Image 1: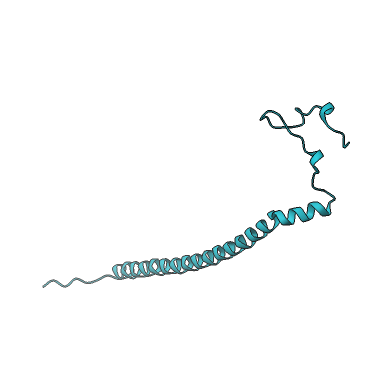
Image 2: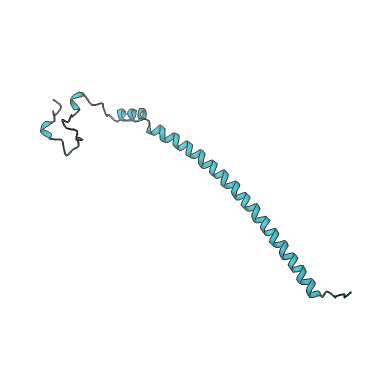
Length: 109
């Protein structure tokens, strides 16, 4: 049987390889923990955004409410049109400012 003497250079290389693998393993575990924390933070952020979105939707539908708009319009001095304020068209075209002939308007009489 041949006995080989292990040199100090080979021992040093072996120790450096073991330390290198350990450092790589430690680095990947630390990265895994950091990614876990990041996922947790993102889940919490998503939850807070969802809750904020729900509040904003409720506020939007409240602001869009016809009852609220009617109340604001009446406070601004707007009134419901009377029957004489309504213009009728004999054809099915939309009435707009270009189609209205001032001679045909009843001028509030």
